[in-house]
Amino acid sequence: MQLRQVRDIAYQLLPGSDRQTTDIVIERDGIITVRPPKRMTPEQVDETVLAKRMWIYRNLAEWRDLNATRVTREWVSGETFLYLGSCYRLQLVAEQDEPLKLKDGRFCLLRDIVDCGGQDAAHQVFEAFYKTKGLPRIQKRAAYFAAKVGVKAGDVQIKDLGYRWASCTKRGDLHFHWKCLMAPLTIIDYIIVHELCHLHHRDHSDAFWNEVDKVLPDYRERKEWLRIRGAELEL
Picture 1 (tube, rainbow, N blue to C red):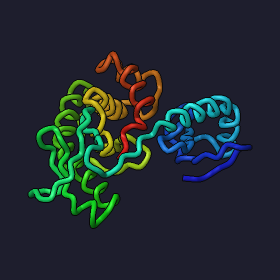
Picture 2: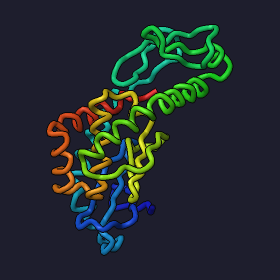
Picture 3: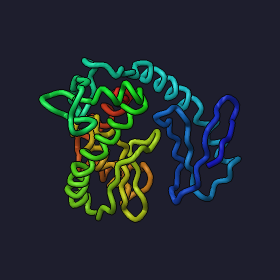
């Protein structure tokens, strides 16, 4: 990865791919990433970025507007936290046999975790919950949709992917951000299908979106939900 600057646009140049077109993306953290065809030199990529600068300006402005509503949650009883698209109120409890439980419609969190470890400790406990509870669900859905997409899914993992919702390797391993487990099931399904279709097409060409459309004809609505409301999926 290489950091480059074209006038007032700073971007990360990713390794070239077998694609025929240059893929410019505003990532979830606002960073601009560019993945060009292997045949292009860095200077040629700079020219492409410059030619696309108005598109980049518009999308950066939109990113700033969407992220202005980013949610900041507090670790106090009564605060709401998301799981599979539903909101559950937090209840700090003195005793229980696990650090965090989803019980009787509430997230029950041991009070000592917040009192002794603070926000970071509470965050880690929630992240572990999403990873542990979400993995079997995503594995099951990935297997279900892999058959529909016509591919064989490899190893499925849930981890912190930084600014990406998910990724897939060339051999078919699927990685999902634990924050996906905050989204509604319809959105999780879209993220899964999106990655599976990359096993047919590594880019975001028309052929790729046609594959997505075959499995999820309403994928545009799901994609738009994630674009607009993805900033809400935060701890």
